Image (cartoon, rainbow, N blue to C red; front, side, top):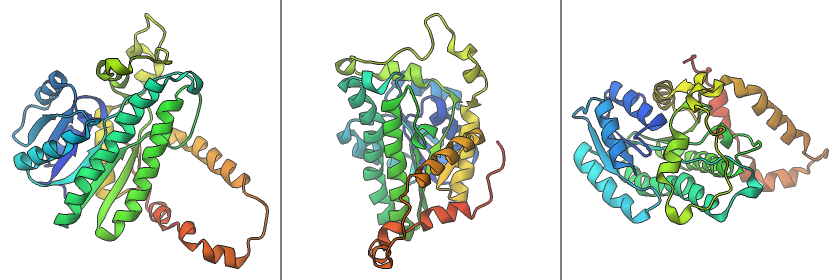
Length: 304
C-alpha cells in the first residue's frame, strides 16, 4: 500500500507507546486515524498530544470483548471512512519464569495479545475483502515472537502465536492483494509494563510475575530503557514497512546473531537422511516457501 494519503488506519492499544507512535506517523503521512484503547483518560491525553486533528477519532475498546468489535468498527468507519490499514497493536506483558505463571497470567496475556488480534482480523479482514482495493494489516508481535529466552515465557508464547497468525494470514490474503506485516520490535521507550498493571482485571489479579526492575529503581534510568528506540521511531518504521509490503518490520538489527543461531539449531536438528522423492511430492503443500523468498529478495530497510 504505497499511497497512504487519505486512507483510514485503525489502531488498537493506541493511547501510548508504539500505538501512539504509529498514530503520529500515519497522520504525518496524510492518513485518517481511528485510535482505540481501553483507557479513556489516556486516549484523551493521546489525542491532545497529537493536536486533536480533524482526521483523528478516538474510541474506547477492550480488545478482549468480542461483542464490542463490530460496533466500534462501524463507528470508526462512519466517522473516518473505510479502514484500509488495520494495526492490531494492543499488548500486555509480565515478567517471570514460565513455571511460576498462574492460570490468570495465561488468561490475561492470551486474551489481550492473541485474542485481541484474532478479533481484529476477524472483524476487519472480511470488510477489506468485500470492498476490494488496497489494504494492509499490521500485527504487533515482538522479537520475543522470533526466539525464546528466560523470564517471559507467557509473553513469548503469545508473541510466537502472533507470528504464526501473521505469516499464515499473509499467505491466505496475498491472492486478494491485501498485505500483512509482522511488527517485531525490540526494546522501545513505552509504558508497556505500567499500562499492563493499569488494565489488568481484578478477577485475573493472581500472578506469578516479578517486577520488571527492583523496587525503588526508576525504569527510565535503566540502560535498556535509555538506549531503547522511541515509539515515534517505531511508528516511522511501520510506515516504511507498510509501503514496502514487508512481511517482517524489524527495528533492532542487533538481534541478527540470535536469529541466525536459532535457524542453525533448527537445521542442525534435522535427520541426516535422503528423503524419497515421493515423500517430497506428497508434502508439496507443506514445503512452500515463497512467503519468505519475497522478503529475502528485498533490499534491507534503511537505518532509522
